[in-house]
Image (cartoon, rainbow, N blue to C red; front, side, top):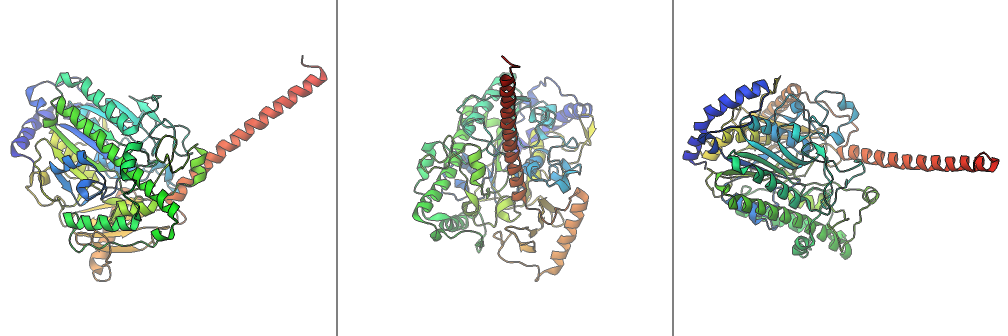
Length: 600
């Protein structure tokens, strides 16, 4: 629970913070210095975001993957079992950093997969718009140092990079992902990996390993300003465990024999462990999807290769955990850890995509067993192991089954008492920003920021849950909703309606009691038609209010991305051939002129 004395200290500085930040925010001015003993009592806040990490991928959440440093945070704080994010990264990040629904923030989908039929709408640019203020902007206006390292994916132009959205020091990567060893793009849709430092494109020193690099840089940022006594907000946004799934050999080797029995056994083992530790309620069933391959249909060589795919994934998670441990050690050694709140989560469920080898090869990658996950190697886990990483939940990234939306959330550190078991209250990605602002004693209700009108936050402050003074922050009449690429979910009280489109969904609506049936095994719409219709009506209201646009009937998110990859590949190939033809033509012209004696 949030300690009462610490809570009182937060409240004591709140009025001071309002006087500082409200005027500054209204005028768009950021104070250069903030002094006073009260200010130093505000906590540092470290937000750690994994990429594509599944519901049961942490030791504290029942995994066989070793994550002792994240588990330490979990065991010293509050770990949530019913936290929902969006099913894909950019919309999740928009809500996480603003507290505003992704459609209102301008990021209803990743820009790489927005179809032409939607892209003309102002709120369908896939870039964080000026109608929202980031949590970093608000904290910086209130006297916090603000730092960010890692994946951004909310825009590439100068005005939307994190350096322009409230972060005073940044090392950011703007794409869906990038290589973890070298500064190179992982897909042909990108001409280069868009890394910037403090808003300027940067050439990174190679080789590096992304998780190590991001923590190294963050430690430098924090250390550079410790002497002034101001609190800091640190956002570490890992590339792990997004494709290309890559890890140092010593981490992969730990798991070479762990996954030899395949994804089906792993999904079952994770399910059983989730039941044992109380992560899911007793009686929770798991659905076995027909699109998951049978492990026994593979040859022995194929099994060995697939098992190593997952070993690299586990190694990447463990490597991320190790570097988180380095950050914790630094904060402890520098005397900051007792005044720091940590928030750890994932942007969505595990990635299921299958990358065509033609695309992988075009980027110069190999897929050899011996060096899988190392420099020059491309690895991913695909839908089979993704279903295990989300076990016992249904589906994974891109889809609005629980496996795509429900991920770990841990809040730990200064003023937060350790809690045994899991906090089962429903919470939502848009709640993170209001909670951070509350912990910092900053104003949560602003109509204007930086001289412009902004969207009000839709998320809720979770500090009453952390205090233990309430059992829930969402009341029976409240609802939260998601729409991404035509896949839909809406939560109301204990119920969820969900629709998943093809190719893996069936375009049908379902109603689940998501509290007792997180595995989404029992459709209740025939038994409870009134609740089902009520929630359909709520969704229609949500879609109209948030400006949700329908996707074309032919639209498939994976296919839209692949079209752009192939288009870029063929465009590059065409340009290459045009250059070759032009060069040959010039040589022919030169030879002709020589023959005529016009050139000596």
